[in-house]
Image (tube, one colour):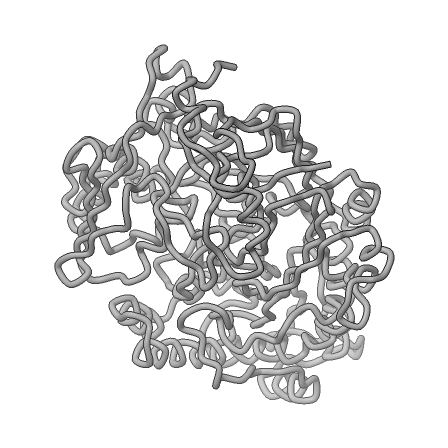
Length: 591
């Protein structure tokens, strides 16, 4: 691995007492973590799952990031030189890039240093709207960029997207100046520039290493971020090493009062701090916690089914506390929900009988018991799609369609879903068997959840079967519309809650909208909300959309989850962050 330039090694002095010079990551230090599922790939524009996003954040760079220590969360420049300039009433956004940021070496660059430029963001973002890429992140730009509709239409007609054609809505004004022009103001799009979906990739790499018609590159990540991929054993292990050419980024010098000691210790230190990251794929929750207790993992997020083994009466258990282990708990910016495939011939559709079936299933499931027993109280019943800590959440809304098996049975009877042969199971109104099939992963928590679902459905006379597959396989099936039902989650990477309502926007069917919900009135309200800043007027539109969801029941609304983390005493720099669950470049290992 090439040595870092000496001029960079001595770029500045630490301000803390007794501090030394800026230095590269310590390659003798390894941070060991675990994921419950494997990633799906390393292509920022094509992947959408949480775990791929976690690793992509360390390989690729975004224009902006959320400060690691500041609360409330503050937007700060990443590869951008400064915060964006907003013009034309919010329709034009100008971003200037820092100079001297380079991609990691790759044969695609033919032995030459390759600087990150504005055109890289133009190319990367055009990939999202390229019909051939079929990006699940299309919702970020769909029907927003000036001139994009014409470019997309031409691509669909010719079968090839013209990446060299001028797009008025997305241009590199010069080598380091990016301009975005929107049809209408979108007050959340700058925050999306913190997400890995809008990270920059190099066109040469996509063309040299891509698959599926040179549009995807799932296994060959080349970025400008703090780490490089060294190894990926599918379903088993990922290894990353510090990027020796990573630009000079230092530990934050401001934060909350409780961060004072951390800032004194690391203020001015060059990032990343640790030279090697090892990620083990450990699907079962008990082995993950055991690996942490055996000191094989440096931090771990506690699965809800094991919380009572770690926490008692709102406190960390004595054996963990005596070992100096740190514990944190916070509400996630996430929603766990169970969707119905609205295009499925059995549970889908918008007629009264189909609505009645879905609402009966929702009322037949004891979500509060799941929270109390399976999740050990580590969740709150969801009252609306937007979680509490995000803009657009309405605290006045209460959960609807709560558990009521008596009402569920009456509703099924009313619409003809009756037990005609006396076997205790209901049939369809036309006499055909009524069998609901639900996707489920083979882990301990979902096994418990399956038992509760089966018991509750049996109680209202519905036969429930499970489609058991690993998470990446279920995700593929879901995006292809092959699942009838699935319990899934959505976690926001930004402060704005609009993406949660985008989960039901009809133009997002096939990617973000797993339920394939399509209702003109909902779409009209969603589109109107996108043109408004956060405030009472937009929240009122969100409330109307929530009421539509309650009536048509494309979802069982689920719950908002708490995130519990255990951190070994030798790990420094860890601070719970709503939008960055694995802040690897800020962490140090001091044994």
